[in-house]
Length: 113
Length: 117
Image (cartoon, rainbow over all chains, first blue to last red; front, side, top):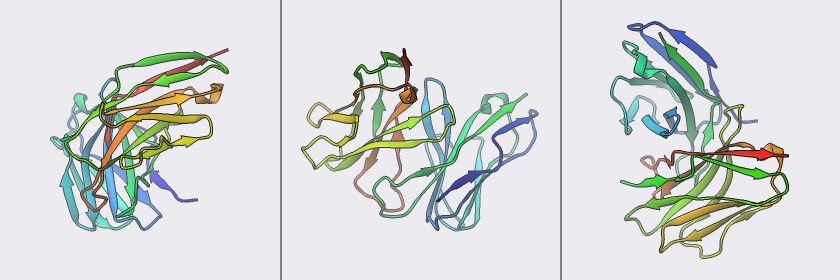
């Protein structure tokens, strides 16, 4: 059964901390995505990556960075967490050329206090 | 840039009844794909149905069907014979026809569906 695994289901961090959200896929997909989900706003794209060490900004990249050192792993980094980054974070992956074909992780609910 | 609008934040339906969730979108592209995703309390996003814009025939998957009106840029989801397990958040999503590396999904704001006995 193919999977996208997010390392934490719930996470509580303090303001100013550096936070790493990890995502691993076992499908050999080229493309990986980080979305943020907020009530009334839906899912918004933060960053995506189409290859190892390659990344592109999404719609709301401010305050975030990403790392993709290996094909299967895509990390979202909050350099200095703030309370307005309290949210649900969803990772997804997709094979290039695939129609739809997105596989999502189960999300990390991050609370910044 | 594409936008996807879901104007119904919440909907309710009785078990065994039919409900329709609305979605409109805006794009300058002539070829694209539309999706409905379901997100139950487990948070796992599940693909419900997809529609290719070049196909005139509306997509159907068991109890789920869409009403795709390309000229009106409308893409509604009809759930027939609603079941308790249909209770979830439903997201409408758009993907351009280019399925290469830069292609990505644009989501609406979601509709929370409640199913009552």
